Image (tube, rainbow, N blue to C red):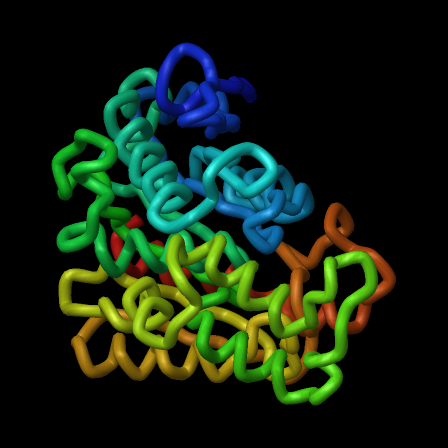
Length: 300
């Protein structure tokens, strides 16, 4: 196996474009030396402030074992630059185009490039999948829309709608208590600050709807696999039902799996991601096989 690390937008990361990526490339099998592999571009979660390591390399190895070349994207976060929409999404669009441009060197089939996102990374992947044609990403990257279009998308416990997240997190009246060491701000103030940072504007219902991937679902969205848990308090599962309903109305091929327990952040649920939640991991572990079967049926 070959592991390569690169800056995404040029020879080196810059303040404007700090994104990087790691390529995990399987050595060609002699009997299939000239048979290119499908590829996945992986976006871990982390609340847009960082990227969770357990949703990066372990996911890459899981897909490598299923026959994919894997690319882990370190998109811009608040720790590295301007995380406001549409900057992380533009990073992903550039990455998809980069994989296609280097398909021969990286032994990839350029017509079989999927994106895989978890939590906040799910928001980024769903946004690109829904708006590759109509959104600002092609112009921002200087690429043709068809070059940035994912051929399929896999979403794990995704964040999809800031309005739902806000409503769920503000149910507790204690959200309006002042938080120590914040200059008198309440939990609600801090939540609105976070949302404004991510969406690139005031945290109004109109702006949140404007950047919500579900709002932009159309028949142009690629085949979509979604999984989550019914007890996820970080990214409430109701968001997923809204997305899948929109996919159904648009006639987009999709598959949904909601596990009855597991919470949030389980990644591929194997020994490399296990913490103290073995029971929950066992419940959701089938998702990787289900997703790969779906991708195969979609031609990837």
